[in-house]
Every structure is written in C-alpha cells, then in structure tokens.
Image (cartoon, rainbow, N blue to C red; front, side, top):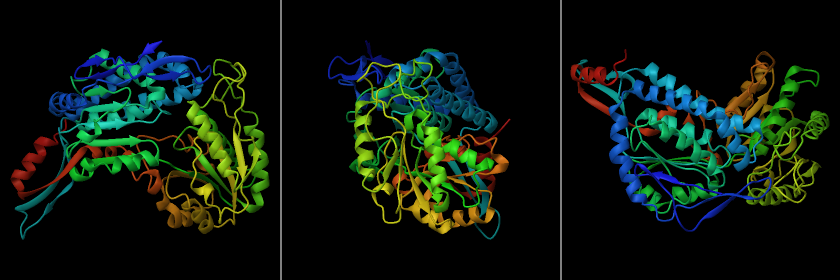
Length: 523
C-alpha cells in the first residue's frame, strides 16, 4: 500500500498520522493512504512566495513557454504509467483515463506555444496607448504584471491531471508559483504527475508545491497578492468565498462549481439527418464519459414535443448497449463511480429527480459490474428520465446528479421556450444546441446566451469536426455564470490574466513607450 506525500519547502513530506484511506472503486480494496497532518502550511506559502515567484518572474514569457513545453513532453513520456494508475485509483476506462491525461498534456503544450509566440517580454501590455491630454505628450498605457503571491489550486476528483495542468499552465506562464491540492480520492494520479515534473528538475525551486490531504490553515493565510482557484461543489465554494481574510484582502477567487448543462435539439432537425446522429452521439458520450462525472456532462435534454418519443427510443437503445463494469475487462466501456460517497449521492439524486420525472432506462440503484465480483464496486448504469412538465419543475433544474444521469424534457420548439428552460438551471458551463436553422440559433443566443459560459453549436457543416460539448479547449474560456461559479479559466491569454495585475501607467509618452518596449519586447 502506498502512502501519498506532499511536496513543500523544496522537499517531500510524509505524514505519520490521521490517514484517509483510498480505495479501488472496483474492488473496494485499500490502495493508498493520505494525510497532511504536521505540514508547515505557513512555511509552504512563504517558500513559494520567496523562492518560486521571483525565479519565475525573472524568466521571460518565452522561457516560461519553453518550460511548459518541456513539462508537457516529460508527462508524455510517462503517459502509459499515468493511464494505468488512473485505472486503479479512479476506476477509469483506458479511454477515459486518456481523455484526462492527454487533455492535461495538450493544455500544457498549448500554453507553451503561446509563451514562445509572446517572446522575450516579462510582462504584458493590455491594449493600445491612450492620449490623455491636449497633446500626445500626456499618455496612458495599461500594463499587466504578475502578482507576487502564490496561486493555490484546489481541484476536483474527476480530472486529476487535466484539472491540475490547466490551472498550473496559466499560473506558470503568468509568472506565479503554484500550490496544488488535488481531491483526496484520486490524489494518487496527481501526486505521480507532480513527482514526474519535480524529478525532471525543469521548474525553478519553489515554483510548484503539492498538498495531499487537508489544506489545514493554508487558506486562512492568503492575502491580496495571492490567488485561489477552486473546482468543486457550490456548497464548498460558498464557504471559501466567505473566508474573512479573503474578503478583507480582496483576494482573487475563481470558482468552477455545479452545472446543469443542457443539450437542445432544434425543431428543424429530422431523424434522418446527420445533425440528429451527432446529437444522439454527443448526448450518449456526455452522459457516460468518465461515468458522467464531468462538470460539462449533459444533465438536461431539451427536445421539441413532437420528437420526444423518437429521441427517447433512440437514446434508450444507445445507452442500453453501454457495458458497465471493471475496466480490466475488455468488453467494458463505462467504469464505476469514483467513491462510495459518489455512488450514494447518485442514488439519492435520482430518487429526488424521480419526484418530477420517470425513469425510462435504469432504476436508480447500484448494479453489479461486468468482470467484477458481485456486490463489489461503485457501479451505476446509465439512467435516463423523462419529464412531462419541465416548466413547473424545480428539482430537475436545481439538483445535479454527478453520474451517468440525464432527464429528457419537452419544449414547444421555440428558441424563447428553450432559453427559458435552460435558464432555470441558474447558470451553466456549456449549452449544446443542434440546428442548421441560423434564425433559431441567433434567437436562442440573444435570449439565452448569458446563462451559459459556452454555447456549443452542432450543425451539418461541422459535424465531422465536433469533439463533443464536454471538451474544454484551452483557446476558449472555461467557466459559467451563476451556480456554475462565475469563474473563468483557460481562454488563451484570458486565463493567464487571472494571475496578472492590470496597472494604468500615466505620464510622459516617451518614457511610457520606452518602458512598454522593454517590458514587451519580442524577438
């Protein structure tokens, strides 16, 4: 059995008490234990601030980009090892493990290329200079400078590599050191990924720290120059936002929380069209990939009333072919939920949805997994519900079941009605809309665009290129309004901006332009 360690103050730390067990979600056998008891959290912060921060800020953006590229390549060398570890620790299928690990590797490489393209600057310019006086002599320029604190990243269990990499890539490119706290249940995968990076010697001393286990009083020590980025439940996010020191110091807090994402089938889509096929394929994938344990998974499926029966029949057929079980069995294409708690929450969540919808596939109970001993493992089959009156429903638009569960619901075929139903979710990360009717899509965007962070459009001309609504691409923002947390990650340079302070510099134009030239010079 493995005992996970933390990496702080330039060295590895292993606790000796208060361990939390990590179980294989298929066999329920103990595979590791984790604790952070006795760790010097204050010292970890100071070490990162005093050692990692200055070292990163001394590097040019291009040099930071080179560093990210090298880290991406190093993780690629250990890709198979990380995939195997994910199968044991997270119960992921090989395909789902690759989705996580390859996503992290690609994101690091993307920001590495971006850094190289930005050149030998150490800071960033924000827009063009502005004349402020009656002549151009009195000038203004916005400059973006890296914060001098630490970026603390608290990540969710479902993406132990991608979740870590996407946050770290932006912070390191900006010039900020990181302290990563992975979700305990899948921390084995993150610990190994960080260990690979540390052993490579690529990062400056203090640029990366890792806490496996509780964060102790770490968050109570954050101040105005620090950043806290959290991915997890809305309930936990609310507690974090309300910490007195974060409020008092106006510490930047970025949240990605609950999200009742919707897939909307346009009224123009016929059952013999390619868009229809893409819609069914996407919904099936977004319900079952990583056993539905994705913040971008489809939870609500909006279909014109007259097409509801046909869509139900098609989805039941597709989802009924999903083989649930131990990923070690070659016939399995969906593994277990990550923990006993996730299984319990999913069962209870389906029961809540059942007050306003009827199960048309699945019964809301645990199942035995193929290739696994009976009675063992956190297995739950794809579950599809159908609602008849989504306009008066409350639970369907408030309860996110974090598993392979979604609810079919009718709408009257208008963009106004679809936007109204999607908006009842209180804000989501992504809404997927399938239609070739540009007027319908435009009307939906105008009426409901602000309720989602991303609008994924499925149409015939791009059907062969669509990756699925669940793919958060580093070029575009990942985040959403309202209950989704109001946060913004990725998005190219926008993601880096979380770790930069915008400063308005005013004065003599010649001096400002000389400063700007030296701080943003490219080769």
